[in-house]
Length: 590
Image 1: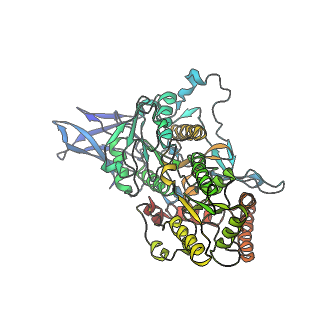
Image 2: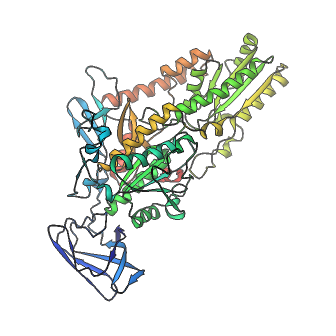
Image 3: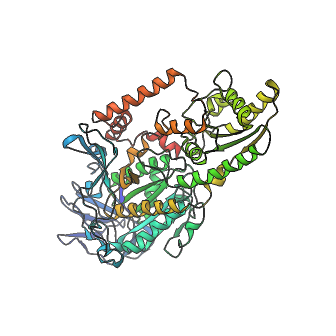
């Protein structure tokens, strides 16, 4: 038997259920189970319930009562169960929605509630009567509007992959009074989390008249282990001025069955999940379980990573704030280094797998002499090594500033063999502190081997950067992400992430977000600009450069042939087989 929906509604003397077309007669048996007989029913609804049952091919449904709430012949409906032998969920439903058109046009569409719940009622969008939007021309997004992933194409090349454009639709699939939404934040802190929470709540309340919004406390495990908090515009009024998240967060704790049971038991029908790639992977699994049960629940992701390592999207919220704050540490390091003979300022920034913060902070600062990131291997000793370059800069300038991402140089750490096998609750590798390690190596080399006195100052602003409120740019971006997510959920879309692609808000399928990481391409122009700014050696031999270029050319050739990369094909195949990308590894990372 399979749980389908859990509306909390009371029955006093129920004789029939009516869905405007047919009546379904009910009776109580000795076990206090309400039986409903039907033949080839498509759907029916229960009084006070926000859910719709997908009953095609079923002949009987049983409603079990929680006897703690039972008084005589009345009771409280806790769980609906049904035989799932002919479940509406099938392998075909798990496949990505791909639409092709002329000229190599490909739309990677997102799931919709109507894909697995037929004959859903629709309602006029409440924004039509909102005076704030009455002056906007063509405010509603056309159903066929899409956004290209690749904005630069050749005249004779394919149009490439597109995503559905975000925004309000003329018809919505939820009545405002039936919406019961929840918001959860997972993973590490990031500037802008509170802004996203605030704008989801205010967007639901002011644009769609939704009054029931819950905050899930403490990440995924809060669905079944923590209390919830009621959210309304008054509660979230000024939270965007504070860092962190008012809902609390955690790593791990993902139990799909418990989470969906909690969603079902609480009567929640819109779930907003804010987190990184591991969290989005968990959201994808939650969506698949909700679809398997046939629930009218929209699952929406808002991508969060301060490292900017989520693919497809232009950038993640909080990244601009992180780069801006990182410059304060770089400026301090520069002042320290410039104020003393042979001064070296070393700053460690975030970037476990991707060096975007280090790269952009370096480019913005213009005071950095060397930037080390995970994507660009380097070596310490010998001709062309880091030590040789440091000595050269000290002789030329008398001081030096180095920026290093936390994931850089891990292969050089002697203790890294053990550390690479250990993981945190999110499944991330526990890295050695490369900043402390390289500081000591630099000191040992110059004082013991070269006999050159140096003064090294090490600054680690990691937790200061991620704990601050978002800046003005990120606040606006968070608002757009949150409102786009709300518009998508109200329009009946589900199983998607709200993200910015080529400057336009889009709806991106979960599998595209979790299939791989975004990383700095060291054969790209942006990295060349950094090398030009710092004058550091590339630390690349000719062979490495050729191999990197070859990989990029192969990737471009796949796109030119109408493919979205090998990783995408593998992800699509996994989805076709009923998996959500690399599900096991992703769930372990949540």
